[in-house]
Length: 103
Image (cartoon, rainbow, N blue to C red; front, side, top):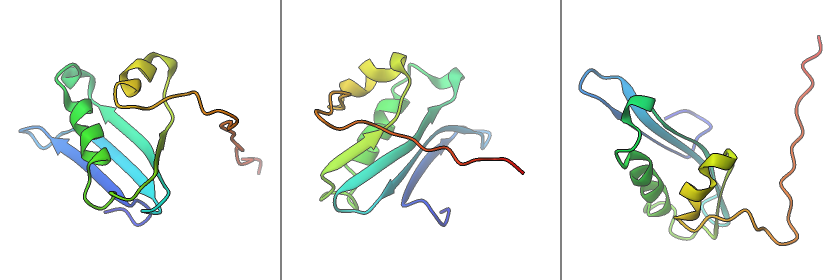
C-alpha cells in the first residue's frame, strides 16, 4: 500500500491490467476523502464503480466515519447522488489553493 494512502483497492483483468481503482484518505473518525475512483473505459457500465463505492462505504476499517467526501465532474453527480452524496453543503464551500510551480 502506498505510504500516504489509508485505503486502496483495485481490480485486475485476466492479463494483470488494472481495470478499476479507488483510493481513500481518512482519519478513521470524522472524514474520509475519496480521492480517486476510476474505471477503465472498456469496463464501464458493468457495475464496477458501484462495487468500489460500496467497498469504501462499507469497509470494516471505516465504520465510525461521519462524513465521506469526494470531488467529481458535473456529469458524475447523479451517479454519486445514488449513494447519498450531495453538493448541497449548507453554509460550507469547497475551496482550493494550488501550489505555485515557479522556478
